[in-house]
Image 1: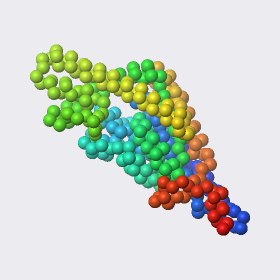
Image 2: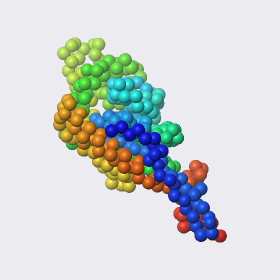
Image 3: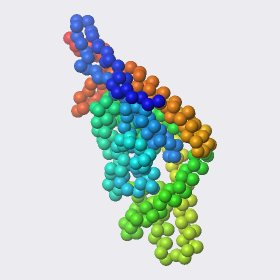
Image 4: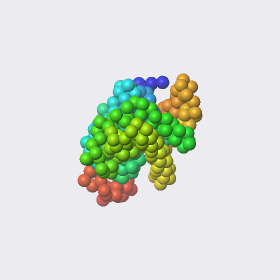
Length: 327
């Protein structure tokens, strides 16, 4: 069911804090705006869920995948196509110089501005992607963000053995879609000797190095063998990435007080075709919609208003402010 209400309909009236003697403390507080994060290992359907939610609520998607933030290599980085986006506005997708490093600090800065712009237009920011270092930088390491926003985390999870099989098949689909030609078009043997920065770090680029350097001087049999080995390495590294992402999510969940909701999408990946689509709606998109709806309907928390230049200071408690005001 599509949620057609304006996001402001979910917002509660901010409580008025009064102290004896008629002091109104309301100017010291602000309501927290709400933000939804969709996290999970690569291949679990985070982008699909974020778009599903954005078609059911007045929402926009903010990318937090550290490879999809770069311009180019759309197949390699598995960016959502225009058709898959279904008209949902996406931010921080293909915006960075592919030869530069877009750091966690860069993401935190740009994402904060985008989220502020989205909430100013009375819409819900849905931050989706697999780069948990970006998520942590914004949700935990940014004091101003924590003061201004209340967060709900949807964790899309899939059984690892099944996920490994799926991402292996996905690499084959990406190869059929033109992954090799896409990398070949940007490959420069005189410059591609350092895969530690920019979009060159993306899985699918360094693995093809030896094949692309030597394909014109090898016979067909050797060339085919080297390509097969490169594709297998892409699959292997993608599976390793999924494991690392899952470990990071579990670690973050254990050490931070996040409002985390785990959504087990494993049955979807065991099915196919129409059955898989129906299961997705039943056990992933449907429950996630209810979770977000409940989150938006909950009374907004309030936080002290702290000047940005003082954001690193410890916020003064309500009793302390009351004591100061009574002097």
